[in-house]
Amino acid sequence: MSGQGDDLDGLSGFFFYMFIVHPATAWILRPGRFERKKSIMYAIGFLATLAAVKTGMSMHAKGVNHYQLLGVDRESNPLAIKRAYKKLSLTLHPDKNPSPTASDEFDRVKQAYDILMDMEFREVYNKFGQDGINSNKRFDESTFFMELGIFYLTWGMMAYVLTLGKKSGDARQWTFTGLIIMLVIEISIMTSQTNPLPTALFPTWTEYEVVWLLHTLFPAFMNGCRSLGSYLYVDLDKQARQLLLALQEQNKDILLVLRDVQICTQSIQANGVSGGNGGVVGAPTVGPGAGGRPAGGPVGTPMGGATPTGKIREMQERLRVSGSQVTNAVKDLKLDGSGKSSSFGFYAMIVGYIAMSYFFK
Image (cartoon, rainbow, N blue to C red):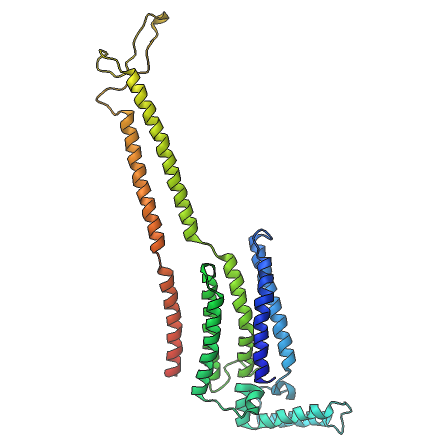
């Protein structure tokens, strides 16, 4: 596949995830449709399945690489490659292969053999694929980092625009973390003298194919972060403000009730005052009723003791102090910005690691 075809494939994949997969995932994650845990599991499964199917279709369309075509691995020496080519040429040669596509198949095998036998072409093929061979491309650090910067700056700006808004804060952090990790992996692979992938696990994978796979999966990863980040977002500041406002309203209601109690108490004290009862406010008076039962009001409190009005005023003062503490807590929530600085430090650490690994390798 040509470089233009790869660009078109990446662009079509972006629009596919943007306008089809993202709305479908939002439908799965709509509140009330499923339980919270089931919604997350269904969404992750849906995204992973679509990414696997689409990536598999793209890999099938690209076809096998030269190593797979000849049946050798990256560590094969020229002698092993020559033996594999001779074995295939005996069966794929147009004189012995009756297939109508025998000539094309044999030409592909011959091209793979010529590239892998030339160590310079082989290195170019490992780094840049068949496009690098067709354009006679060579690895140049300045050109490589310029193309790398253009690619990641473009995707970084696109990811930032797509994750604008308070609800997408976590999604933005996840996306940029994935982007930085992908950048570190690509730099490590492309600047290494040998392929760092273990041959036992990936015997025929080239550096170009690993980078292609990362670039292909990133749109799926970004849109998955957008969908799950918006769904899992919890506005803690909003919840805290609502709770504190409810507490303030509760305090106001209590103050109103206490004011009514104070008025009633003052009224009872005013009506129950009686002179000449030993200095006792609201002392009972014994009337001529039967059995000598009191004919007056309630028993009062001594003038020198704590009055109900004093107790109520004490409660009001405590509620005022509590209200001031609630107000200060709301202000502290608005001024809290430690999360941004910690995220900045995390990204600065990764960027510093990239710079150090490049300049001191």
